[in-house]
Length: 384
Image (cartoon, rainbow, N blue to C red):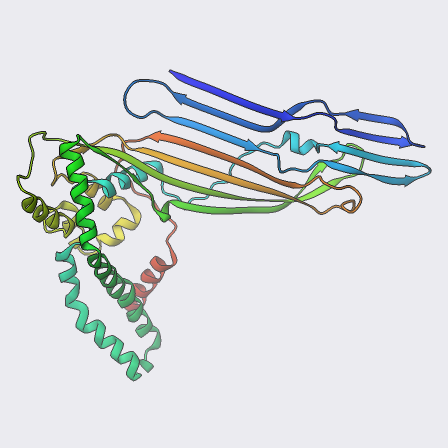
């Protein structure tokens, strides 16, 4: 069953727009209460057990300023505004201009399961050891830069050094940093397993800076009011920010599963975090070029989401999306020093909860600068 709740707080009346001759109005309009100054809408589903879809919207126009002022037009006539809400502010339909940088809901659902799975590893020691084989060559490359041996073939050497930095030094340093907080991760995983097997499950919320994007639109020129024949124009611009995160609950698949001693549990957690178990995602990472496939698909995350070294299963993930658009109107007409107001800021914000099981997917993403640099360096190497 769906429940819909709406709360609307209208613009309060008292707005006046007049054309006057000798101070006597010969054309007059009065605004009554109406239109949405604030509007809140919440639609959700009711039912027992589990999470349910939900949509909330919040439209706030309280930052838009009313028109006030008097303009003399000669022959004893004038145009007069008092607390007048420009018509465009009444009619403006709040909405979002979405970018394409935030991953889809299905992809976030898979990533949420992958990053909260009790079977997940934190750093793969086998892969780390495998990466060390390139360390002598990487050190020799640094020595060549220092000694100036790379003067010739500048483009090719730059490509080589970029690949060494992006695919050699960067993951190596990242693994060393992860190993430096190894004990903290062990303690966290011990708490997870204790909640899983002794308390019946645990819930994790997963956020990532990669699931946030901001898109700017405008500026464009908009006439917000022309009721008295004076065109009140604004430069309109907006910024839309999208944030997405997920959560899911994990349950034990085997109620009788138990590690007898604390020492045994700790040893087991060490093997999980260090990737010493034969987990499918670790084997996937070891295959050449799968790192590039994961730019265009979620195969790696899907394997990590469904790893079952620890006998556990998850609920259907909940994916939350918060979208906020801030729209600004700035007066640019010739009357802005006569009439005050008629500009300001409005905020339109939505929050939605989607229940999504996640699935394998493939897409053509917008590659980041670092990814493009890797492709460029590989192309240069092939040309050589």
